[in-house]
Length: 286
Ligand SMILES: O=C(O)CCC(=O)C(=O)O
Ligand SMILES: [Fe+2]
Image 1 (cartoon, rainbow, N blue to C red):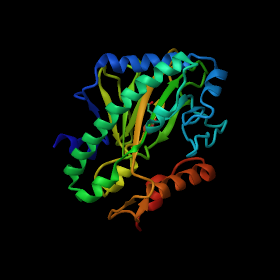
Image 2: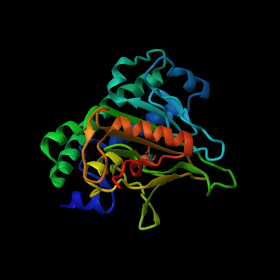
Image 3: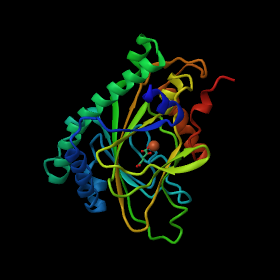
C-alpha cells in the first residue's frame, strides 16, 4: 500500500485528491497575507480576549497561547496565528473586516481539514491494523488547530544560519500543510540529508507526528523538518495539527502508556529547561 510505504519510509507525503478547490487554497494564502500586512500593534491587540493567539519569534506556545520562550540566541524568523478550529465560531470580529473575512474562510477550511484528517487516519489505522476501539478514540477532531505563518524575507548577512522554524518533529497525530505556491522553505531530514519539499500548486503536504509514531509502535516516522528563510521574499504557510484527547492513554509496545497531556507537559518542561523539545525519547521503554 502506497500510503503505508510513504508513512514508514518518509513520514511525509503529498496529497493531491483532497477535493478542496485550488482557488480556495490560493484564497486562503491571500487572506493570510492581508492579515499579516496589518500594523504590528493591531495584530497584537486584535486577539486579546479571544481563543486565537498572535505570536512571533517562536512557534512554541503554552496551552493558554503565550510564547513559551523567545531566546534572542535562536529566535525563529516567523510570525503566526494559532487558531483552535472548534473555537472559531465563538470569535466574532465585525470591527475588523480583514479578520472577519479570514475567519470565515478558516471555518470552511477547518471543515475540509477535519474531513481529510479523518479519512487519512482511518486509512492509516487500517494499514497498521490498529485495534478499532483504540483507533476510534485516538483521533480527536475538537483538538484540531490551524496555524497561519509568515516567514518574512531576511536580509541579514547571516541568512543561512537563521531559521524560520528550528528542526523539530510535530507533536500531532498528523499535520497537513498548505504552503505558498511560489517560495520553498520547508526541508525534511532523510538519511542525514536535508531535502527541500518544493511547493507544487494544488497539493497539500501531510506529515506524521509523534503521536502517530507512538500509536504505530514506531512503524510510521514522525519526520524531522525545519523551515529556511528567503533573502528576498516572504513565505506564507498554513498548517493544521490534530491530536488525541488530553486524557486518552496511548498504548504501544515501545513506550510507557502516556496521554497527550503528559506528552505536552514534558515538552513544555524540556523547552523551558533545555531550550528544546526532547519528545518521544522521554517515554521510551528501556
Ligand atoms: O511552515 C512550514 O512549512 C512548516 C511549519 C511546521 O513545520 C510546523 O508548524 O510544525
Ligand atoms: Fe512542523
